[in-house]
Amino acid sequence: MTEETEQRAKFAAAATVTEEGFEIHAITAGSGNGWTFTAQVIRDSLDLWNNKNSLVDHAGWFDAPSVLKLGGVCHSPSWSEDTQGVKVKLRPFGPLGPTVEKLGRDYLADKQAGKP
Image 1 (cartoon, rainbow, N blue to C red):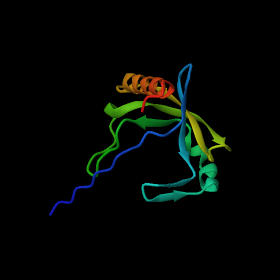
Image 2 (cartoon, rainbow, N blue to C red):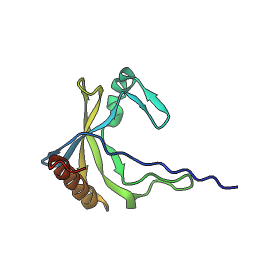
Image 3 (cartoon, rainbow, N blue to C red):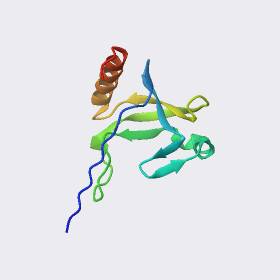
Image 4 (cartoon, rainbow, N blue to C red):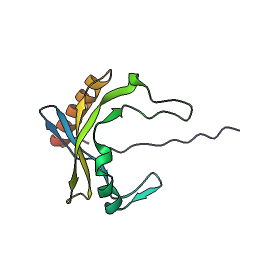
């Protein structure tokens, strides 16, 4: 018997455009996807967020991460007291870098225009 599970992502993260890409909130304190992270745990993990590849889509149970899904690199992590989370700079590059760049700019433009 096969059981299917459907999960949906809600884009609610704050982001700003920078000269080299975007500044995004990578993670904030709280619960999500069955996990709970305290502000202290996230603050203690700050160094782990530097120079991490960002992939478009998640690997499935039987998939491995693929360079073909590479959309950028997250770097220069900083702690945000306001959001109780980690902010990083995201520099789009790789095979899906242009897609990440366009999606990010389109999303932010729509958000600024008041579109859902």
